[in-house]
Structures are given as C-alpha cells and as structure tokens.
Length: 170
Figure 1 (cartoon, rainbow, N blue to C red):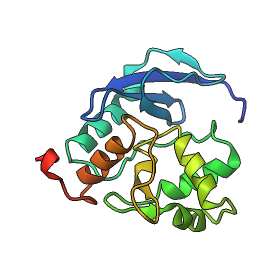
Figure 2: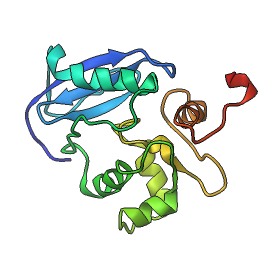
Figure 3: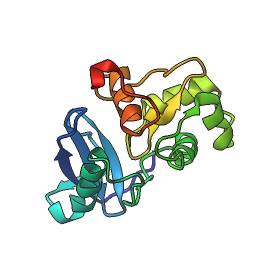
C-alpha cells in the first residue's frame, strides 16, 4: 500500500441490497461497501457533502435503472500494484455482461491464476463501481463477499439484465 496523506468524505446510500457506504478522497472514489465505514490508512475524515454528491447521485441512478456507466473518477492509490492491475481491467467490464475468473486474468495480462483472481475479488475495495459481481465461475455464479453474499450477486446481475428474474423476484 502506498502511504499518502489526504482527506476522505463519506456518504451512505440506501439500496435494495442494503445500506451502501461511499468514500471519496480529493482524487475520487477510494472505497465502497456494505457495513461500517472502512478505516483508510493516512486519510483524515472530513464532512464534505459536495464531494460525495456526484457518486451518491450516480449510485441512486444505478439502482433506479437509469445508469449503466459510473463517471466518478476512481482513486486507486490504496490498492497495491497486482490487485490494481486486475481491478482496473475489471472496471472496464460493461454493464450486463460477465467474465470468468480466468478471462479476467487474461484481460488484466496478469500471471495471477483464477483462484488468485477470486481472492482479489473478495478484497475489492470498490464493489459495484468496480463490478466484482460481474466475475463468475466457469460452472456457475461463483462466490461473492458483499452484502448478503451470492444472493446480492444474483440480485445485481438480475438488475443488470444478465440473469432472468426468478419467480421469487416477481
């Protein structure tokens, strides 16, 4: 991890898959996720609703079905080089599509094996915006560590139109 100073502003957004936290540095979105606010090394928390307003609006639009591509810049500085390489390739996977763990490794031009890609997905500091829910196993959905686990992944992929709704969704 790079040690850098700066500030971070937090916002929370209610979503159909749980309360979602957003963390924005001066450079861009630095972390997202479910649950409590992450501790971000060397970033001092500030109250700055103007800084978080753009991503709050985008997240609201995403869950309302009005947004397919996030425009908020991503601040990658807290992600070490190999995971960053993989996550930056993942960031380019379009709405409504999926890749396998092995395919993501190839797209990232990484020597990380598919199992290692799974570990990087599980530690993704920017879920939804860097869409780890779009990475699937060759024989099914694979795992998911965000929200309520695989059910959250299933909901997100259904929301994006990749999976068809089940009777339980109707």
